[in-house]
Image (cartoon, rainbow, N blue to C red):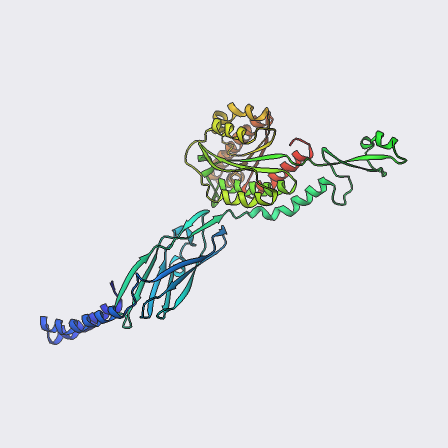
Length: 436
């Protein structure tokens, strides 16, 4: 039970005449006894809280930045009306800062034997599973003096998925893919490395594409047409170690890597390639394999939702061994990791040859745009020192990238906004060159 502000106000007002005209225990009893009786009657007339039936329904998933509505149904089996204030408790990251009180608290009235619904709108600010904690209900009597209060466990989980903001680049990359596939009207024929079909020669065709055997069997000159490679294996390897926890802007590096991985997965699945996912630091955090083209993107999004950076050094040998098991035959391995010198030189470089001798390796890294702005800063002594520090950091990243390139690795180093389209372009370039 709980006293309300109305009870305290009445007690305070009643104490004034007692203190003025009759400052004694008799005066106090004369005021508080009727108030206590009124509170007891009010408590007895309030609907019981623990007998209420509560169930949930609504959204079970939502993209980061989008709202999720969860409906709570309250059933009143008693013969007294329920006048209540309800608090639906969720983790703090389920709300935009400053909106928790307004969004989580509801007032409702439920007549005897009936039910009512209230909807809690979540606006999560972090990925992952958001689980409902408890529902606290305060039931008021008709006088509003003394309340019944109780809590109910009503489990529900809303999975917050990566936002996939790079989706806006997908139409332009698909257009480029169709151009490579020769399915659009372009000035040059479709490029590729796999034989597609024969057609009649037209002026402007490359004479090296003429099929002389087929030409000898018919009255016209025949040329070969080609298409980009299909049914290739692509393994997206996310480094979830400590370097992925560094924040770039408002989000960790891992989130930018996930966004780029989703764009590449969507593009590759449309191109007819098979896409798998591995998230690893010192153990496997997520593994998605063998999904069909239509199911690969939802599976990746669902698996990435609960992956968080771990504050420990990534085991490069373990990552390499796990990647080789996940891709036993030739594949394109896209490793999302940092270009910091120490983790690369001490961790990745000693085991890199195990990957490059069997697979095509592409390293994608998230660059900090603040460092680029620092490098351009001038105007005072502090700005000059900051520019020098930024230039030194950029030089170290460039030297690390050059080391990887000397081992035959393709490197994409870009800011969060530019990483996804740059990675898609690198994939298309490899596909055009027949290196998948």
